[in-house]
Length: 546
Ligand code: FAD
Image 1 (tube, rainbow, N blue to C red):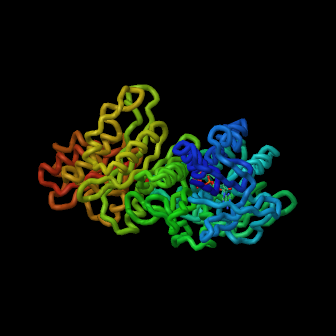
Image 2 (cartoon, protein in one colour; image 1 turned 120 degrees about the horizontal axis):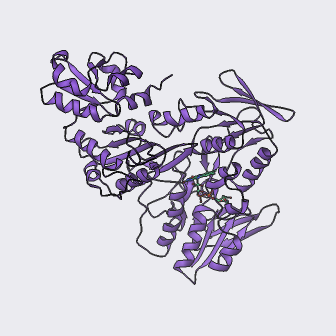
């Protein structure tokens, strides 16, 4: 068996090493057009920020190591330019020379990744316009930063953009962030990004939303960046992180099927439309685990797992890629934001029926020093409570909860399973009722109709409802929802005469807990009452204090 692999980083290197572990006799040839294999793309922003100080730490393994330990024929500086499917050969050009070689294969694995997208605007090819994908890119960016530039415009507030913002600020560089959407992290639901936007602004980052860069002019060593708003920003470098496009030229030229957004179409065994050619990683289109629709998710986890799985299939194992649920996490300064599964905006777009809840638990017992709050949004099927997606914003403990919820989605669990989840607890790590249990309790109460709720984004349609703030007078004074009437929960039973029995009643507290108690009190007395999910904190996610 001769396996040829194109691309030697996340998916490609995983495939190569797995192939050797499964077969000592296989011939494994890996072509990589760069000089490095298996480097840590995900660590690149932290090298710019000097969090990772030694460049060599970014190199996970070397061609020599792959040759020595795995007997893989690694050929760097080799660009695969053509697939001759009829002859089962790839055509390879040595980088920087006209030398062409042909290599036969029994099975071919494509893991060419995705390339950063640059907009076709005037001046885009000027010097000091950067994207970040390779070690060469990071060397250029770091050299510029080390030279002492004072100001960088980062275009694109996605994961890589935000990581670069944080690391540039660490280097004492002024950062202007420009984003086309009306929010940062556009893959997430807007309200869940409010805390990270506030954090960026608090750290002095100038954020322009609903804005694009329309032109770039170089004046001496400076760059004048023209924004669509009419403003100009003078800086030393413009860094684009506005998304990636699958490297699909090889696949398209050889007639392999690609999807509407350019991803190489694969089946659940990672085979392309040619069963002897597999494709993995950022270049492919696979199935969305939750929605069962087609999707492209450029993340390291799926790339690595797909590389391994493709090779398992080549060696006859009965494997199937489950699809991807796009579990992702990012940190900017003290704020961590994470998501898994479907977002609300995608569920709406796909016309799926769903319910949602918000809650704001602490990462561990409040009495133990250092507890940090988080905001959780849980999306679930309105009929059976099956978990469809989750987003969390906070600090410590966000990573743990998103991973638990990611596993719950993979296991096809419901909100009732979250109620029953038994998770590790000591005061430093969690609570006897973990945030995951709390999410389950609240969501299960909603599905069982014990706990009628309403959401902040429904309030405008319910303007005639009687809105009651059940917090304390002090809390109310510090800020409340316009038009609300204060009746603290402990006075509610004595002040029922102030609540019109014939009207829709909405109660809210700070996070939803006292509101729930108030809802139970009023519901049992016959009121048509709903609790504002996530309380005033959820209100502030939608309507930040100015
Ligand atoms: P890559 O790892 O990009 O490898 C593709 C390789 O193929 C490249 O080295 C390329 O040179 C080579 N190649 C392409 N075409 C050819 C050809 N014709 N011939 C020969 N060689 C070729 N993901 C996360 O999940 N978490 C993170 O925190 C995260 N952070 C990231 C930060 C940055 C700055 C970047 C750039 C990416 C980050 N990612 C992260 C994404 C993650 O790195 C990718 O999803 C993953 O590397 C994709 O693996 P891949 O094998 O598909 O492509």
